[in-house]
Structure formats: C-alpha cells, structure tokens
Image (cartoon, rainbow, N blue to C red):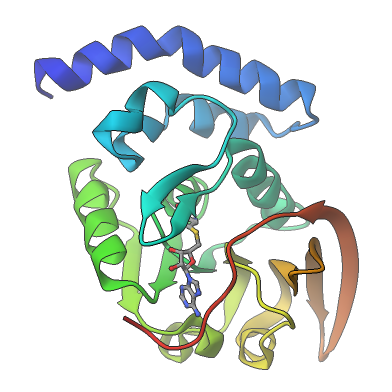
Length: 219
Ligand code: SAH
C-alpha cells in the first residue's frame, strides 16, 4: 500500500467508527454487516476529490449521473438480504462504484453483478483487483434480464429503481431466495422484499427510498 492510501486510511479510522455508530443508532443490528462496513475502505470507491467525505452517511456522485449508495442503505439492504438463511450465490443489478458489491463479497460465497455503463464497470473491476476480492464476477449488460447463466440465485439485490419488478429477476430467484429491490417512479419509491416460497412470491413493502432509476439498454 502506498503512503497516500495509508495516510487516508489512518486518519479515517475514527470517522469510520463514527459511521458505524451512526448506522447502529439508525437500527442496523447485524454485527457481520457492521464489521464489514467498518473495514471496507469506502474512500477508494469515490473520486479522490470526494475521499474526505467518504465516511459520511450520504450518497455521493460517481460520474455518468450515478451515485454511490448511502452507507445506511447498503447496510440495510445487506442485512435484509442475509436474514432468513445463508445466501451463497447473490446477484446484484447496478454495480456502480462497486461498493455494495464489495460489502456483499465479504458476506456471501459468490457475487454476480451486472452494470449497464461500461466505464463504471471497468473502474469497479480495478477496485476489486486492488482489494483482492476474488469472488466477484461482472457482466456488462442490462440488468432487466438478470444473468441467466448462473441462475438461480439465493439472493438478488437491485441498487437502482424500476417502475415495476422485472419478471426475469423473479424467475432467476431460487426457491427460498430473497429479492431486495427499490420500486417506483417519480411519484416515489419504496423498498420491497420479495421471498420465493416454492413457486409463489411473498412481498413486503418497507420504507420510502430514493435511488437512481433502472434504465434500459447498455452504454
Ligand atoms: N451499488 C452502487 C449503486 C450505483 S447507482 C454503488 O453503491 O455504487 C445504480 C447503478 O445502477 C448505476 O451505476 C447505474 O448505471 C446502474 N443501472 C441502472 N439501470 C441498470 C440496468 N438496467 N442494468 C444494470 N445496471 C443499471
């Protein structure tokens, strides 16, 4: 590790602890999730100019009109995904900076992440390499179609909001699997949890959220 990275890492240990304390205050209970967030260097997932704000509990721009998700939301979605059973194979739609992907990679066996914007995917790949996260596979594609090749998944997490749940994602969910997804348009979104029980789907609506939209096609 070069001295610049070490410098940022050291000064941010206290701010990282503060972030974790805030997530606990907001109701995150999973010690596994909190530990991973404490240890994950979020400043490597944003532009250098924003690195000093990386441990604030806020979304930040990552270019191409997209944002790295707020740590609370990452923690919450991860906690919900992991509840109710081990999740060995997880798919993510919307790699973006790769931060959520990296957090998941520490908690499940394998992560398959789909991103439609090629330069974001390439930057994320570089970060995973640097951090030696070897259980992540990436695909440049429109996540509306999931990632058929490795289906079915024990868990699917979507980090951009469609107006309706893409049917293909439900199809690629294993029995006993769980989909965590923000749903809604400009009138407002809410977080949904959908469990596959045999061939039926049980949906729970949680809090209002604010994600970038899930768009079609790839660039
Ligand atoms: N988990 C990411 C969130 C990035 S924002 C992070 O923490 O950094 C959401 C991402 O979803 C953006 O990168 C956007 O390009 C991507 N996205 C939007 N629609 C998509 C689609 N149809 N397929 C794949 N990715 C999509």
